[in-house]
Image 1 (cartoon, helix red, strand yellow):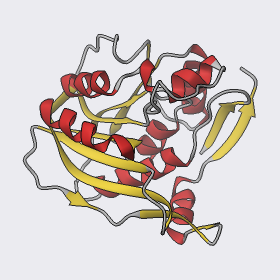
Image 2: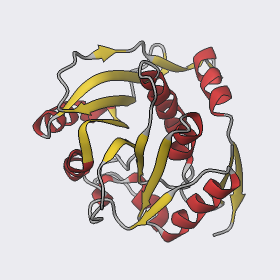
Image 3: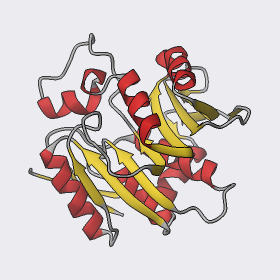
Length: 236
């Protein structure tokens, strides 16, 4: 998959590849995956395009607040022969005309009180004051169909708040996976799969370890092989 990205500004990273792999793993148990898919804060489009590529019956929708990323996302869809509907505004403010079967997102999750980049593009893509956690979860619950699926990744240090808010907005956690930089390091990222109005019990997948002896682990290399992306930097 060819993906154009900005030469200056936010570019997709390993978190998106890990989330993509987590989504595909959790969808494997379902037959005939179809319906409306929404990529929330789609950036250059990588996450939604990968999931749509692997599930041809899904109808891809994307929403993105930044004009430059809206353009890149639509270019990337055309380059990879995938159709998409782009919603051009803040996810929180958009009035969607339909409900969705699956929502996916690699949202901005850094706390707004940390030292921020001076690059406005990076600020919006990284820091959660552009999409606060509760607003993000509340709006997603509102637009999901009953039993709709919701996948996202987030800073693991905020897991207790994530659990509280998901329960409040009737989103039941069905699967979690923790991402560790190394085997002896604390988890830095959590991958979350929830379903609206579900009562299924939680399953915690084996942790994903990123590095071993300064090299990517086999599991991570397999994820990169499966996603098979090639990035091209462009001026926007």
